Length: 361
Ligand SMILES: Nc1ncnc2c1ncn2[C@@H]1O[C@H](COP(=O)(O)OP(=O)(O)OP(=O)(O)O)[C@@H](O)[C@H]1O
Ligand SMILES: [Mg+2]
Image 1: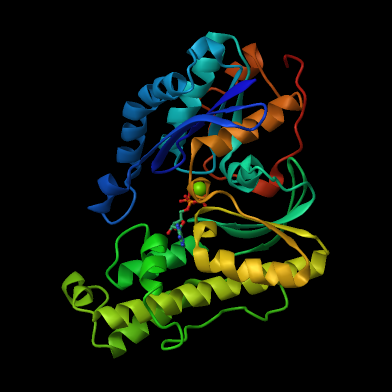
Image 2: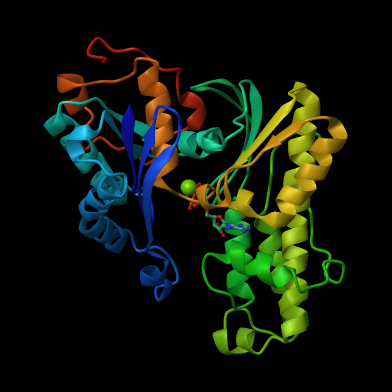
């Protein structure tokens, strides 16, 4: 069984083919970061147009790389939400059209379910149940996962997501987007003890997060260093040592909060497996801190391969594969009803386990 996965929820066009043994047969990814960088953020209309131009050729490219024809596919999965409506529509048009034309099943997938399941592409995948820390550009959530589609939200961010905190801090200290990798790189040369930034809600007793105070703290520090964070000329003048130490301080604060809260959730729930996913889960300090904490607590830690932490087509293909294997594989009229149907706002915990459909394979 070979499933095509299509991801177009924001500014990455991702396509991949995954087989029933969870092997990634081919993958293709195009990041629009360079295109949006001159505007200081993602321009939704440009994102949609770029997905339209690239998606079909990338599908052909993936089939060729896997040594297959389109007609060899057994199913198509695309991201149905959450995300930018216009961007989602690109995948939600081509995905169902391909499946209908080929007479194979097709399924719209929740983007965060894709992230959450991405460690299952690993050679040693986690078994259910597990606790998941989802930390991406738009989300920071602790989820109890008892099975496919059985997700209970235990903690959420009250304001900015962890990735957003990396990105906003990076912007203020004169680094480009995405900020996470840039901060992580500079932090490697910095002293995290020089600027100790706030760790909001660290011991609040619940599992919620708050990261918006971090940007205010970075702003205050920059002003003390004589830098105007709103003036690019001024931020460029920031001394390399100050920039490195600030990056290290930001990274340490975010990672400590994520680690402490994830381990608190482990203690509260008694789970013996922790899964991390989403762009921030690529962070080396976070992986190291959680690795040490989990080893101490006798908990298994599962991280996606770094290239699968940020948006990609393989995680969408995998989520589609797992659901289709359980019989949720609409064809014909049920499949056609999904065409161009997107859900820009969609809570992960509202998902259900796979529902076998009458028209299933
Ligand atoms: N090594 C890293 N360290 C810290 N943050 C990182 C790293 N690599 C990527 N990120 C962050 O991950 C985020 C992007 O991740 P991802 O692609 O999963 O988010 P998104 O798709 O934009 O949001 P969502 O999945 O919530 O809709 C960015 O905020 C980026 O700065
Ligand atoms: Mg994402």
